[in-house]
Image 1 (tube, protein in one colour):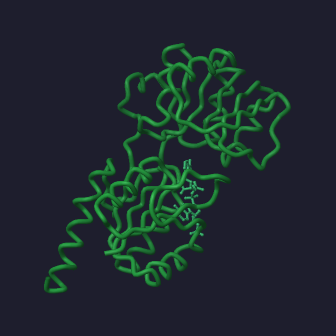
Image 2: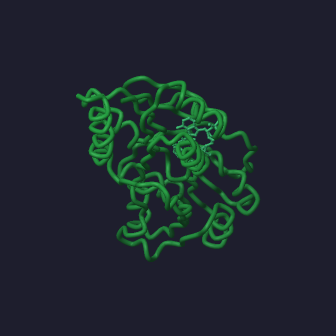
Length: 255
Ligand code: NAP
């Protein structure tokens, strides 16, 4: 069986290692947004498919038997396309998504918002020295409301939008430690942290550091997941799901 792994996350890379270890034939794909992406082990293809029709065609051309969507919880477009293309092509789809931080210690005290526009407005009301960790693609939503703030903006690659003169750009890539996040928040004199509900442990230290320093946290909620797709939280849970299809295909092949 051949598996398509929609990647771009630490969980997707962990899953690629598991699949390789199991000797499963798989192909990872990345959007190509980042100039020097962290590559998973195994075969990798970089670039979009060309929407739902492109993905459908790709599934057929590559002989894909199952798809695992391990993209970031905020990569909603890719996940939507995967649901539609897999349904049309009758290819089984599993979502691998780490749980959000809603149940984390201190989460009740955070400022939960529906989108980046609301995050920008709420952050502007909370402080004047925000630490923005929302990714470069969302920064245009913050430049207006935080035009006069002294924002520290951490991104992997420089954004396309022009940033206010008072903002400081910090090109950097995690993971980070609690000590380094605490030092960063202190050095900037951050009075509010803005983040997406990415979940997992990869970017958790900034949350712990902000909580520890009493810095308010603004968290952009995730869009609700598609109810039509089975979902697991850990890379290891993907293997039993795939196993059922390889058993079925062995049965179909009379082995
Ligand atoms: P998006 O808005 O959901 O996707 C936009 C388009 O990019 C998709 O329609 C698809 O193009 C292409 N694409 C996205 N993920 C792909 C993948 N894994 N393989 C092949 N094509 C892909 O996604 P995004 O928010 O720009 O994120 C892009 C990538 O960065 C994702 O893979 C995600 O896992 C990773 N990432 C995103 C975030 C975030 O906060 N959004 C954070 C960390 C990592 P076509 O329509 O042409 O197929």
